[in-house]
Image (tube, rainbow, N blue to C red):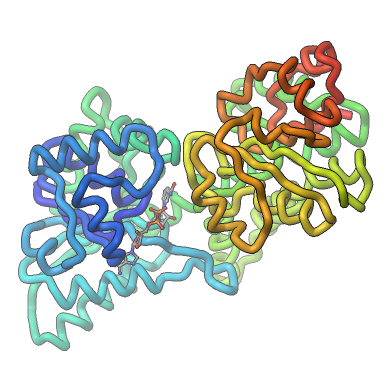
Length: 439
Ligand SMILES: NC(=O)c1ccc[n+]([C@@H]2O[C@H](COP(=O)([O-])OP(=O)(O)OC[C@H]3O[C@@H](n4cnc5c(N)ncnc54)[C@H](O)[C@@H]3O)[C@@H](O)[C@H]2O)c1
């Protein structure tokens, strides 16, 4: 099939490369000229395992190309995906300005029938807005090209995006027109070859499914974090409690790891947007509002541990930060808990030496107003520090050389925001060890 993808970020680029890999002819569009120029010469602007080779191979085969020209992309396509950002607006709602700009661009440049697919995460009712915008633009042009708008929310996880797209748990498509649903089923058939995982539904339900899924996952995280905080108050150990509850199949072990709060480009903004969507329809989403509140509090949990151990005046002290991205496997720093922690330490007079395997370039942007010493090795940051704080659970932090650490650090203190070690192991190494949900 001939596919255009508008928006070449984490989602658009991955979707485009994966559709191309399955033999479709895909043209990827972005307004960012620099990004497109780099992609044209094979420079991929994001870190995502497997994406570089997928983009390069398909460019070479001629199945994937890049442009800033929407008209060129639409001329060659029968399906167009909208995969631009839907950032959080000032009131917490999803800001649709990029999506609606693309709708206008489609109306202004289409020259034949198109299936327009909303892949961005958008509030319920957005497909109607996109349809109206395209139609209005076509009316101004005095054109009567037909089109259909469908919803196809994306569930990929950064860090495992290629695998998630290639072997999705499900493909959700909301459509009114059965012909469009059939085309979407054909497009996704190679991705669900061994077992049908295509779920067709009405458009509003598809739009809502994405928010409901993210709200459920965020709820699991805030739930276990709240349990962890209660554990600290009552003298229980969340690590043992987690094993105890996960063994119940109705609960399960997935996504119940205590930590320093969720971040990233999706959960924070989608949870807020869902609260806003509900409010706009006259319903107060009490549980989801609490999920967000608990998470905002949890982002301070590591700083609180520092204050409990060192006091509020951190002047003359230096802290090493292991891990900056909002989770391992990505360079994405959006809403990362490391940002809150680093800002709080610096505001209280402390100094920072930070290391992350992939996110340092992004971190420099998000923390540009703050003095941070960045290093390219996890041991170099430890020189004469008063404590090391593990914020992102990259695999390379799992079995560090404790003897080497001991020699470099001023004091042997490890504050662990992801509960990566057993207390016994760390204490045997002579370290003070602080984790989430354990006294
Ligand atoms: N990142 C994820 O893990 C993830 C997962 C599932 C769903 N989503 C959703 O997918 C959408 C995209 O997210 P992302 O992380 O890929 O965003 P992103 O910020 O990485 O990429 C968006 C891209 O769109 C481009 N763009 C903006 N306006 C444009 C226009 N008018 N024409 C062409 N290009 C334009 C930007 O330059 C940027 O390259 C969001 O709604 C997000 O919530 C993201």
